[in-house]
Image (cartoon, rainbow, N blue to C red; front, side):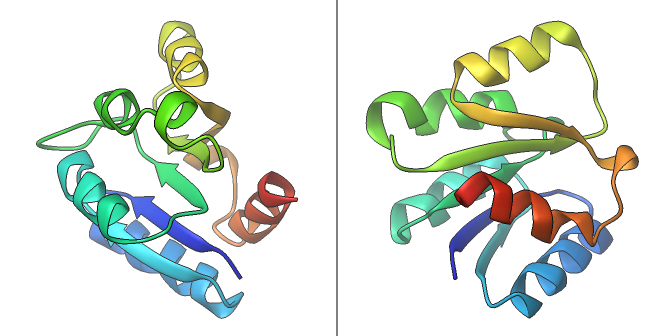
Length: 121
């Protein structure tokens, strides 16, 4: 079981991913923007962050910059889970500590369990 921070601004996707992850016995903390995500991350011990790029208030890249995985949370894994594919954004996310960059439309929601297990193992 892992503590997962899910940053997803679409309520239906947030519900789907949360339900699937919880069914695999993970504790899920969900937020609809990076600012809320930072608050949750500061309140809980997080093992993995699933972060969207485009969100209101604070997007995924700004969240990764402020959360600062490399310097402040080296044991936390991060995966970008978005529908935005831009080489510069992919490169920036990886420099900020994201271990993977997944296009949501390229996976089935149920694939998220395999992705999480692969990332945490």
